[in-house]
Image (spheres, rainbow, N blue to C red):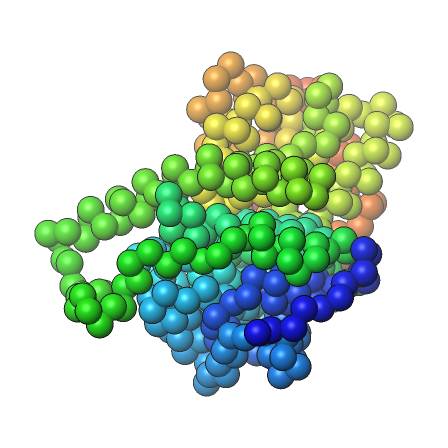
Length: 407
C-alpha cells in the first residue's frame, strides 16, 4: 500500500511538480518515460515518489520517447491506468505511436510541456509541439499556470477514462514559463484527489488471454474509414463529458473552468485570443487598454481538441476586431489558431464578422512584452474604428530586423 503525502493547504510548486503530484495522487499503474527538457522533472519527481514508497505502480525507463509511448500503449491495453510526459523533439518521435493509442481508444494521459521544435535546436517554450499533435486523435487540454497544470491532470484521467469517451488526453503547459515557475498551488489531499478521479474501471481490457484478439491489424479501404470516423465522432461528442468533469471539479474545489473563457468581453469591441501563459499577460494589457479608452477583452480556450467551434463563435461574434496569437511558425500559411478561429466565426450565427489579424510571436520563447500587447490593442482599436484591417493580416511580433508582415 502506497504511503500518503501530507500536503499543506498552499504549496509552492512549479508546473512540473504540480503535475507530478497529480500523477502520484491518481495512483497510476504504469509511467513509462524518457526524459527531455523541460518536461524531465515531471517523471524525475514521479520516479522519486516510486523510490520513496509513495506510489505502488511501475516506473519504466525506456530508450526513447517512441518506446515510452509504445510501453504506455501496451500497459493501457492490459488494463492499467497509464501516463507519461514529454516535450518537443521527444513528442515528435512519439507521434507515430500517438495514432496507435487513439485508434485503439486507450485512455493514456500525456503531459506535454510545450517547447520549440528544431532546427535550430531550442530548449525553450513555444507551441510548435502542441500544434504538431493536434490531429493525432487525442483530446488536448490547455493550462496557463502551475495550479491549472495540477487541476487539469486530475481532470484528464476522469475525462479520458469515461466510458463515453475512452480517448487519450494531453495536458499542455508552457515550457519554463509554467513548468519551471514556482507559484502558490492549492492541492487536494491524496484521499480527496483519488476519490474525485475514481477507481479505474478497465472494462474489457484489450489484452485478455481468455479472449484472444488481434489489434492494430490492417484495415485498408474496407474498414479504415469507418474506424477513423468512429474516433472522430467520439471526439466531437466528448464535450458534454468534459463540461461535466469541469463542473464536478468546481463543486469540489470552487475552481471553475469553462471550455471557452473570456475576460472583459461583455462590452468589448476588440480582443486578443491566445493560449497558455500569454493569456494572463494579455489580461493585464487589456486592463491597461481600458484605462486608455479601448474596450479590450481576452479570450482563450481550455480544450484545443475537440475544438469548440460553436462555443467560441458565440463568444466572439459581437467583437469588431480580434488578434489571434499563434506561438508557432506557420511555415507558409496563416497560423493554426487563426484558421480555427476564422472557421468558428464564419459559421457563427448572427456574427458581425470581426476584422481578424494573425500575430506570430514568442518563437523559441522570445519575450512578448506589455509594450507589444499594448501595441496590438492599439492596432485592434484602429481596425475597429476603420471597420477593416489597417495593417497586413499577418505580422511577426518581436522579430529583430525589418518588420515582417504578409497578406
